[in-house]
Length: 217
Image 1 (cartoon, rainbow, N blue to C red):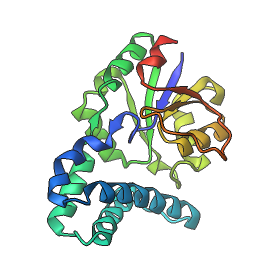
Image 2: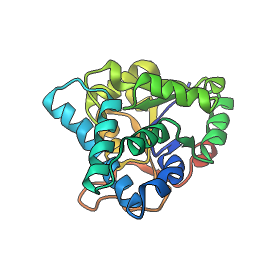
Image 3: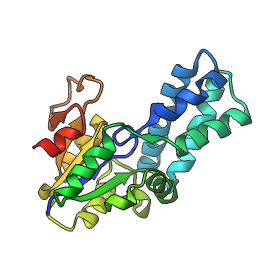
């Protein structure tokens, strides 16, 4: 049986989808606030890795929301709440459900390996009917580290229950692809927006532009 593990945010779930709705309430700097927030969210998670601290991804996310809004002088409690609600209700990319359905029909074992908290991932699964496809939502919060630390991918390997090289990991985040590759997974970089792989980093993955390509191979 072929196993596919997917990153969640930015790969299956469109972070931009929900934030379009709250952008008017943030103002003209909404795009810059969002970009700053996403950077801080990841940095706080990675800092927890380095420090060996146990912090939930929801906590990292909320801290990033407060700091991003504050750094652009547009913080309010109402905006913080709206931001967090938007994050909890992101939608699937248009091509995600069809691709998962195709892989499921082919008998693939499907999982989502994410830094996100278990309850948040389960909420997204129920909202988007991923349970119907047998997609397992796997949070790294059962380990002591966030991706791209090796311990995070170990959680995915336990779900896969096969050799590392027999598991295909798909992510739109290059740093996540590298982490999974170093762990030993077969990796695919989902480059939706035709961005550039860092020139100083050796390309280590097959590249696709949309998820349907997985089912075409």
